[in-house]
Length: 492
Ligand SMILES: *Cc1c(COP(=O)(O)O)cnc(C)c1O
Image 1 (cartoon, rainbow, N blue to C red):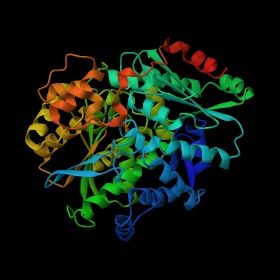
Image 2 (cartoon, rainbow, N blue to C red; image 1 turned 45 degrees about the vertical axis):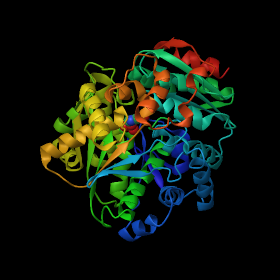
Image 3 (cartoon, rainbow, N blue to C red; image 1 turned 180 degrees about the horizontal axis):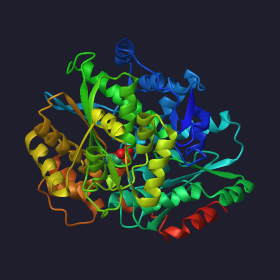
């Protein structure tokens, strides 16, 4: 199967798309056609475990990869480093609400679902495309991607990885997870600015032809582990289909019955993977796009105007503190069917910081997506309420989605069974969660992990234990203009 760039229809195979990350014209790669699955296929997937579901579903998009190869990838990506044998279990809250828990991986957030798989896909793609240079992965992170990418690529032969995070813009636990990362091939630096500054900086480095030339002479090329890489998105399609199968297996829905997914959204990567699953034939009624106070997507889905010229809020759900949702470009391309139209919107975003989609596109968007947002106060209230009523503990991102689901149901009366996509362990954001369940959070974040465990009787995930005793290896803070220099020295 071929992949197109959203901006110019340049084509490449799956391995080429994954190896490149971003298309040479600055666009994102999208599949030429979306493979379909029937209810019969779904029935067969119901009988399989998570790894085998991943092999079958990813294989539909990766013709250049043998299924034995994918089996090996799935076995090592979703092996013992996952704390739950189901890998991505679904837990039910009441008769029409469930949580898809995506945080049993080594960094306790959903990014592991893709970033445990990506190094396998990427190193194999490089071989298949005949690449002889070594790859340096560059990542801009709002918190969780950075650690998950470091963990996925640490000591992978033929690779290096450099992560930039916004100084003061990630949680205490997230920062410590990154700056204590082990591995000979890893680098981490804070950037003076917010996530969008870091992401823009990384995109500029990718677009710098002179720098690419210099690095190439030294045997290096740059690639991305951000969710702009198709190899990040593809593994995420799997868990939407897997969750549907689990709901059927549990007898909570019948095969073919439609469900809703509610997704806490930042860069639009997670929810977009769900939308691909629906295009494949998964019976989904609506996707509800949940935002925090950085509600640029709520406004976009309601009005058709995407406007990033607005105050940036640092919230209790920092992995969603994003004003430029990169993956939206893929959706705009597929809904409009036009590379020039997509390119026009993206140019307007770069030049004016905003764009308004056509009425036809807005109609298509609203036919599949609903939306809502939730501020920190209501987020914490939702955590406290669900804990008190159901003894179920949500992290702040999941709680944003849960509250938006309640608002959506109240507003629309839609009682379709809903799966809330749960994106992080509550222990990762323990200060807010502890306060929300009535605890005292007057100590640094990492010390609160044990306190949250004592208060709730839930054991803390092993990867978060002893974080404050680990050696801090990376302390640098750079200006955003100095990011290219930091990369050049890292590869010197
Ligand atoms: C990254 C992240 C999100 C947002 O996901 P996108 O794919 O960027 O929309 C939500 N919650 C958590 C915990 C995350 O780490």
